[in-house]
Length: 134
Length: 181
Length: 92
Image (tube, rainbow over all chains, first blue to last red; front, side):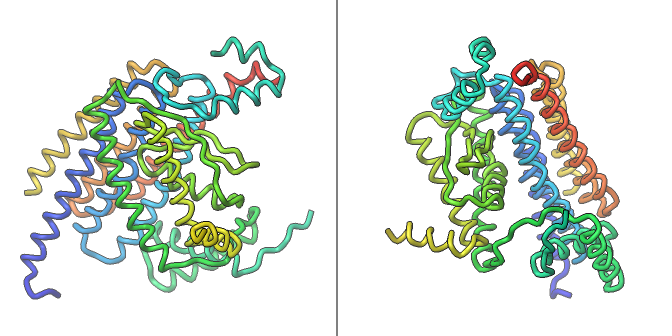
């Protein structure tokens, strides 16, 4: 197939090895973020990360190691499933976290949603819950 | 009760996607298997039809490829940044919730923008106001007004890129006017 | 070389899993725990991917997809449940 299969093989092996190590480090980064960040929302930023970049790198490593063309669409489908589901679950958890006041207000520099939420709550005329919740 | 029939052309992206998933699940891309998959896809789309996604009908591949490359680059850069923040700043990080009004009012564009923004680490869609098509985005490490402006510009740029790829003609014209002005 | 890569990734993933489990145990709220469980599932998926890459097979691929779908359904369900339960006093 190629003039020097051994050299090419070594190169592919090296690239996929780098991908695998970086992908595993991304998972480690997520765990560090989970442990070190102060509130739920910033932890979520750390948590959605390995699933996007880490999985991409690992799947690319699998594709490189297998060396057949037909695995690439399969891996792509697996990755696109991730891309479609990760933001949805992150949004759902984030929304629930915001609504149930898991946010540390003192860690926010600006909060442009709060005014809207307060207004909507006033409009819905449930002021007692609104006052107690803060 | 009768729903507006969707044209085959509008359904085509969905069918192609279903066939690819079918082939991927069987891990077999032989013509016979793909044909069976296509038949099943048509049957499924006819029997269990959902409200059609209102695609604009245009898709600019030439703009999509650089967008995908830039997207990957930003994911890599932002991942490294979040890693650095987790290790270096940890508990002292400051965040913000920023309201970003979008140009487009179509559900597809708002969803796509929200998806892309959520996939890039460091920003997360907390709430969507569909009536005004405003995204409320939680940004990591947003310390002052300057960072807020930067985040907002980033989101609007992402939306502009998506409009260039698959927005309607009206949205594209409005975008061109805005850039030109 | 593959041996070395395997060792490094195994150590990294083990540390990551330990961190996620600590967060599950400590997590002040239910949502924290769900998030950490999601990360734990992602780490499991990463381990499955590395196994596939090192041993050059594709048997785990659907397992990886299944794991990510379980993570998705789990966190969405719990988030929905949490939101509903807390919002009930608001909505008559």
